[in-house]
Image 1 (tube, helix red, strand yellow):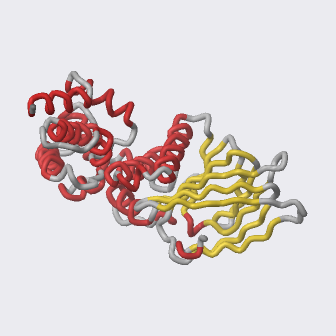
Image 2 (cartoon, rainbow, N blue to C red):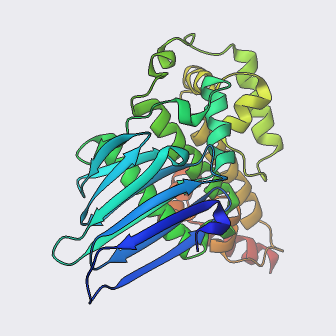
Image 3 (tube, rainbow, N blue to C red):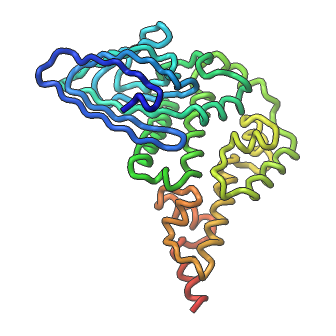
Length: 310
């Protein structure tokens, strides 16, 4: 199951005549998820052949684990979330508690990680960051990461992210950026060295690029690279010039595109498909932000358009 993705995992379950296990994997454009359930402990040895730059975020639902990362032993419990550059992962011993071990591992693919890393720090290898491998779930960062893992898992398994590349790209970037900016690592001090904001001309160019390409699965790293600034500088500049984030500004542009599409009498697509096409995966939240922006629900826009047509 794992070897096609550059992972050689040599495993040996601990002796237990009633041993049971189940695992499955869902693969997306920028990320994948592996879910595993075991009835007893299991020892793993890893050899990642083609996984340079891939970043794993692991959650334990039940049981405990001990990881060997770059020669260091790291303990894991369900009260923590693990963050591991895959090539640094050497081995793992998992332990069932009350007859169960359960885990969810979200892996962010090399392309997505490298793009955000380059936009933030320039030419730097993920494996050289020395990321802190454990984040406590009682912290705000831990809870946000947990929510991102759950959202990504649901989106991959129900096919929503495959149908909405824009949402998938932004979700992957959000997870990577959150880690780089909030989890301690070797380059953490660089985050405070940037100027206070980007010159207004860069922000204007960024807005022009967003408005010219709302149909593309843009990320903030893409936009920053296009206008020639770091993603962090772009974030700070947007807050000063527009009082909002680049993601929020891009969302507003896409909301306008949805409003335009739903307002056309010839549109025959259901609201949910139009929303997915433009990167909105949660219909309840989408309806709320749409109403906040335009003063009516998406379905009201459709009815008005079709009433006008008749």
